[in-house]
Image (tube, rainbow, N blue to C red; front, side, top):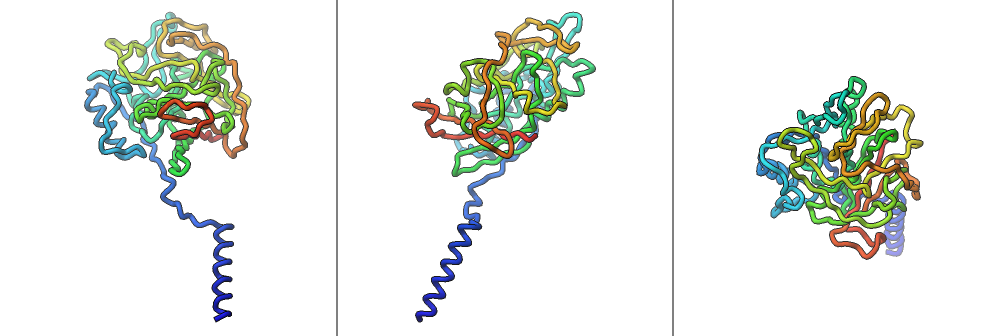
Length: 332
């Protein structure tokens, strides 16, 4: 009996040690792979058709709910039978009059990325355009693929969505910038976000001193019928341009082969000076100022990352635990 007890205790001890050194994956259901749906055309569909598409994808998302209806605050501005700006970011223009341009509307729509990928709460958007010159046209379709995430996973216990992108091309020679957009987060009731520098290792610089890394910002993204595409009758597209959410990658972390192309923002008519023989037209309410703030990495990581915290209600401070976290990871 005594020998049997000792033997049993020995087995228990051995199993305990093995589990500590090689823990069993008892939480296999904790991590969920997220399917990245490739952009589709939304051109000339009715608002109800688009709502039906949205609901069908939400039903398969991490936010699935039998009572889900698209937020009117976010999607209510969509109008029937209108075109949508293309995802290739190219616009056609008259080289003799850079103020005369039209965004492409053929093919997959830019903001179908958000609409049919509801499990991704925040996207990195490029709210500008690329002039369709012979030099830049080949880059347009390549860029459209870069702006679609490679993969994503949801870890329930950490309340975290991890989204992997290819490294972002450098547009440091013009007034354009990337912007965080949170159409999906807003649609699901997350109203505030903050970029946590203590957990971010991807070096970026915001174009405004007051930005997403200095204070919690309210999410204000929505889809509406706008005139920025310069197509007669307007296009359904995203809004709003916000300097406090716009950033540029710091060039030193990118390879020398990173593409660089001058671009356009989607609201203002003022033409900027030519850059590398290609016109850059700013369509926003205000030309982007020179970058002023550097994102300082604080945590080592195998791949550079940006860490965003989301809340449904405004937190007492940026250090408050998030309702949902979004981690962007960038492949070199």
